[in-house]
Structures are given as structure tokens and as C-alpha cells.
Length: 474
Image 1 (spheres, rainbow, N blue to C red):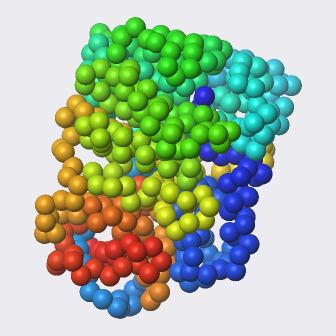
Image 2: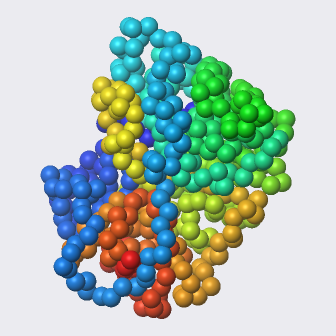
Image 3: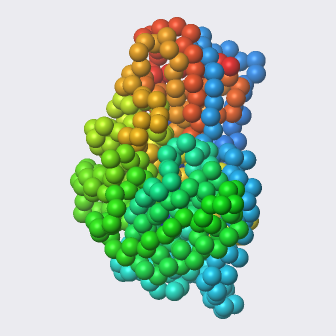
């Protein structure tokens, strides 16, 4: 099943954050309540300025050391303008689309905020009491589609649109598999985000234990494709959907060239009886058992430490299986943000990316507020791996320190001493602390390249995490 990372205030992660927020501010890690990495080195309290309100330029200031690299390119991960116009219209009117295929009475609509709040508890702090087939009940399915699926579409459509269709090497007659498909969230998001793929003749096996969720998802998908037709008038009006009732491990007729799953491991890990290492090894093997000779894998999970840890471990398994990482990693070395012990307050960072929800559909934001679970930022962790050879092979450490350095930003802005602003990032150097002297507003998820200005052997290290500090100028 798909679940959004926005949940009721009593979930374990909120309690975890509260314990840390209640402590006296120090130079230790600070966690955002939405699950993203953020921090402050100046002891700011909760009543002071929010991270995203911190200015990213400090005119007239001098830094304690010279620059280390010059910024050459920057590629955003969550730009709204990249999302196709017809996709934005669908997202903004999604509730109306759902009402057209899954009508609800006025009384049911009035109870929707309470149903959303109840389901949120069942997906988090009361998950051990939740029935396996919870999506088969009309009220739970309605709450899931109107809230959790909608938020997931907002997140995934923006992610896929910014990655671009080249990240998903799909050809005519390809077979794809979406495991834990629920109401076909990934299929719909990919259709909306990548118009270039709409004309391809593709078959999707959508696998889930809830037949009701699959059936409703297909109805929603067909309604959306009627509003967003392929540019090629001779193409099929939609992809071929084959519903498969069953859990991961259920057989399908053909091997898949594209295998996806979103929020599946969050549910498999719900009772805590399995370790991340066990889940990663077991399910990577199961995913690969479905794969055609040439294949691409996409795994998306809520951006919390436990799920980021699983994705990091699966990344290692994919690399060992001879696959290359399409995104988000800028290198093929050891994961610098593996999330080990992060849930328990350790200093290890976990890989996650976030964007503000200011421009999310107004009706969705209102429902979130009415349900008592407003959402200021959307957060996720993900990995795309492939053996198709369509991307340039990434080396473990790079050839020399004179070549360009690629970095993936994975935190909100951090206030540093001497009026500086920093960002934690991943690079071939390992965990890296970008010192921003460029005057450019970096954002979580940004992929930047910078040209080294000297040998990186003498870089300073962050006293808190051991990350190498790289001061970047424009």
C-alpha cells in the first residue's frame, strides 16, 4: 500500500522530534518535524527564525578561509515550473476527478477529515492494530485516495518531472511492474510528469493485496488519461493495465524492464520484527527476480531515518548486482548518508529530500488543516538504479581532484559561525558540508557541479560530523 509521510502528531517520529526539541539548544543535530535534515550551529530556539527564512547571502562579510571550488552548474529536483501544465491542472482538480469515479455523499464528505485523521493513526502509532486489508473498506479507501494518494501524487509528479523522461528508459512493448501499487499512484504520477512517455506502448502489471484499491486506481487513471492524451494522435490513449491481486512474490507472466515500489517497505517494517538489513537483502533479491535482462528499479519511501536506511542498503545491493545509480547519488562510492542510528539521535545523516508545500493544491492543504495534520514540507527518500547503460558510469571516487565535483544537496540551510550558510551534501568526497559563498539559493535535492580551485587534500572538516567542508563561489 502507499502511505504519505504526513501523519498524526502522536507517531513515533513526532515523539522523537519532541524529545530533541525540548533539549537545550546546542551544536548538536536539529531535526525538522517533516523528517528532513536540518540544523543550526548557533543555538537558535524554536521561537526564532525558521530555516527556510534564513537569507543565503551575507553582504560585507569575510570568510575565515578562501574558496575551494567554483560553481558551474545547478540542476533542481523539485521545481514546480517543470511539471507539465495539464498535469498541474489534474493535480489541482484531483478531488473532482475522484468524485467523478468514486462518488461520496455530502455526509461522507463532511466526515472525510475525521476519516483521514483516523487512517493516519492506523498508518502510524496504531499500525499494529490495523487490519491487513484496511484498504478494502470504503471509508478508509476514500480517506486514502483523497489525502494520502493526493499528497503522493504531488510529491512524485514533481520528482519525476524534474528527473525527466530520460531517467525512465521505457520503449514500446516494455513490461513494467508496480509492487504495492494501491490505487496506481506511481503509474499516474509518471503519466502526468513525462508526456514524452504517454505515446509509448507499455504494459503495467499493478500488484496489490487490495483489489478495491487497484480497481479504483485504474478508474482514476483512465479518467486522468482522458484529460491528458498523448501528443501522438495514432498512439493508444493510455497504457495497458493488468491488475494483479497479491503481495510481493506473486508471479506475473512476463519479466519486467521497469520495476517500481513506493512506501512498500514502510509497511513491511511496521511491526519492527525485521531489521533494515534483512528487508533490504530479501526484497532486493525479490525485485531482481522479476527483472528482464535490461532493467531499471525505482524505490521511493517516506523521508525518515528508518526508510532511508533501507534504501541505502538496497543501493549497495543494486551496485553489487552490476547496476548504476541514476539518481540521486552523484557517485558510486559508499553511501555517506546511510541513516545508521539516525533514528536514535546519532550524528549519522540520512538521505532525504524536501520541498515546501506553499504551491500545493489549495483544497488539499485545506483538507490537511481540517484533519489536524497540516503539511508544510513534502519529504521523500528514493533510489533509481539501472543496468541499461543509458547513463554515464559513475566512478567510486573520481579520477583526480582536478575534475569537476558533483554534489547532491540533502539538507535545509544551516546557520554557521561567521554569518555563513551551509548545506549537507553527498559527493565523491563522502559527506560534504557546502559553505555557500555563491549567493545562489540552494535547495534540498539540488545537484550541483563545481570546479575545484586547488587540491582537495587539505580541506577542513566539520567538527560535528567529520564532513569535508567545501566553500563554493559563483
